Image (cartoon, rainbow, N blue to C red):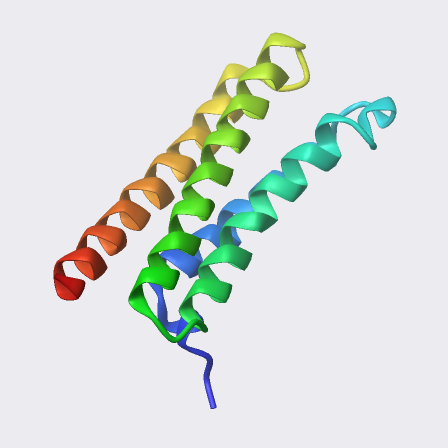
Length: 121
């Protein structure tokens, strides 16, 4: 039996985003292992994890709440990405690539939230 979250495009997109963040942070300085690397990876993996947890909930209200948490993790990731550029850990092009992924996941997430809210009212 396939889990409900695995059918969601936004979940699939967020898995790709998390993978891209792991790949990117794998090139950061080793002294950041327990700093920004850990924070970025946690924020990135939080997105698909919260989508999955929300999809497993019984109520639409709970699902929307978990989707909102996933959105917050995207904002957190965006902040760490900006900091990474400022610290010289990444190039502008690398930031732009991840920014695009964050934007796409965010828009898809917002659309799903709107759709669920409309069905719930």
